[in-house]
Length: 76
Image (tube, rainbow, N blue to C red; front, side, top):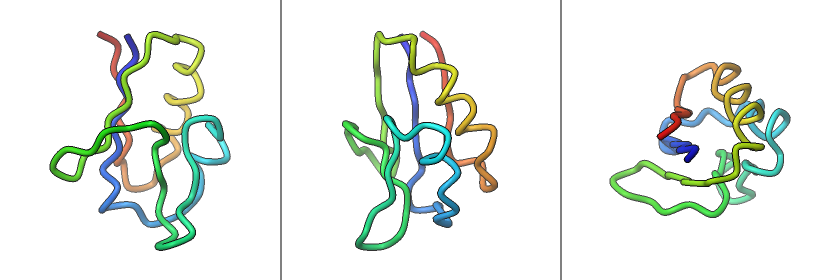
């Protein structure tokens, strides 16, 4: 299982995650911050759990490109 976590409150709105993984992220029109699609929020962390390993490369690229290191990708 691929587990992606976003600390949205620390997002600076650089848009790298959306460019590298558009099927996982989009920018909010309300506040200009990244949104991890299809997630559940808990204490400021937005988490996506997926059995689709096809999202692994794109999510890792988004995580590496994030200048404030608020995206984590783990495999369980």
